[in-house]
Image (cartoon, rainbow, N blue to C red; front, side, top):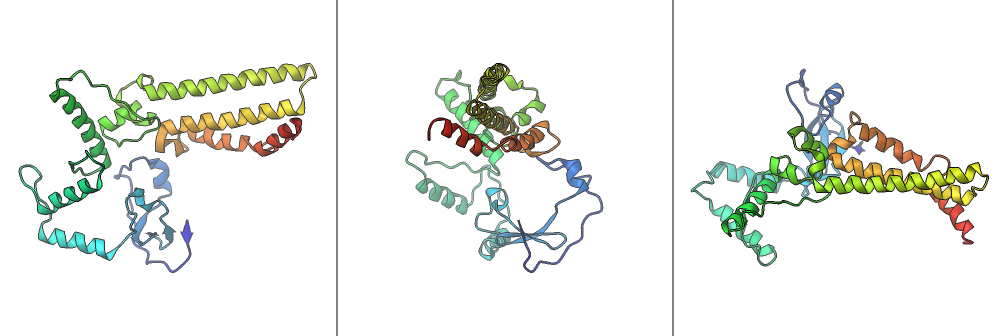
Length: 281
């Protein structure tokens, strides 16, 4: 979202963008029309050409306090001046123990230990390793099956990818997509919906050929099939995660096309009105 209030000064842009390989990004398309940011303050980003953009997503959900907060940057600078890095193996710093105690106090009963990580991906993989190690130490080493949530994103480490629900994150690493239960269940549900819609449509065609298809029956078919199309495409898109919104992937184009089907030849709301009238409502 653009804000036309006073902008910050524009900055220089590199002549060559080829060397930087960006994650979850259609790199060739991006580098033809790059969206480059030069700065940020409070709830806004500033582009390299001086435009002001509202950051509605708080970075990647990690800048909830806003950008450029003096209290935060001052605390970071103060700590870096005093001690910029300490090895976490066999050494510790007082602040880490203090923070762990404060987190444990806030956590529900029983969650009283804290293991610090550098990222969500590292945290997910570490949690998986802790779970496996726990059962090993308790003499239950055969308990190795991990359960992932449908459409779940657990980072880009091998562990997080293996239990995630985003197909595109797994297919490049040799694990068959069909071997994951959540993917099986999602595709099975989609297949069932498509078959139900096909049966409904076949019946409507037969009625139409016989001259017996009513307006309400036609409205029911149109309503069910177009809404089903959107549901199925949406569920399939979610399997791709962020990749699903890149137009280089067919699912992104299918998603775009499916949305308008609920409008063509009468919106879903109009179909509901026709059906309701047939019910005497």
